Length: 216
Image (cartoon, rainbow, N blue to C red; front, side):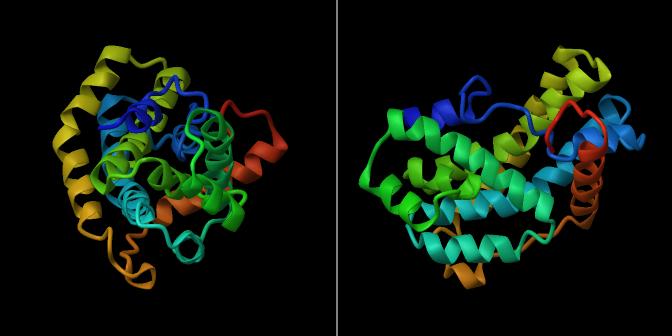
C-alpha cells in the first residue's frame, strides 16, 4: 500500500477525521447500538452495504471517469444527508491533498467536481484499486467504531478487537470492489442500506435542532 493509502487509512490524517459517525450517533440515540455485540452487528451491516458501495466507487475512480462516477454515486445515495457528508469529507481530503499529493489526476478531478465524494477522491489519490477499496472499507467501520467509544464509553480494546475480527470481511469487500475497477460506471453495483439512509436523515434533522457530537 502506498504512502497516500496509509495516510488516508490513518484516523489521525487531517482530511479524514471522525466528526462523522456514519449513522452510529443516531443509532445510539435510538437504542439500536448499546454495547459491543450490537456495535459489531452495526459495523458488519454498514461494511456490507454503504462500505461496499463506496469501496466499489473508490476502486473505479483509480481509472478516472470522474464526472460519470460522481453522477452514479449520487444516484446510489438516496439520502441527501449522506450525499452531503460524503462531499464534506471529500472536500477535507482535497484541502490536504493539494499540499501533500498535487497531481494532474487530482487537478482533473477537482476541475470536474470541486466538492468530490469521499470515495472518488480516495480512488484518485490511491492509484491501486485494491488499496483504494481497502482504505474506504476501513474508513466505513473505523469512523463509527471511534464514535462508539466516545458516545457509549466502550472499552477501546474491545472496539479494536471488533475491527480486528472484521479483517476477513474487509478484505472480501476490497476484493469485490477491485473486480469492478474497469466496470462501466452505470453498471457498478448498488448495495442499499435503507436503515442507514433513515438514520442519516433523522440525525441531520436532530442536528439542526440540538447540539450533536457528530455531523453525521
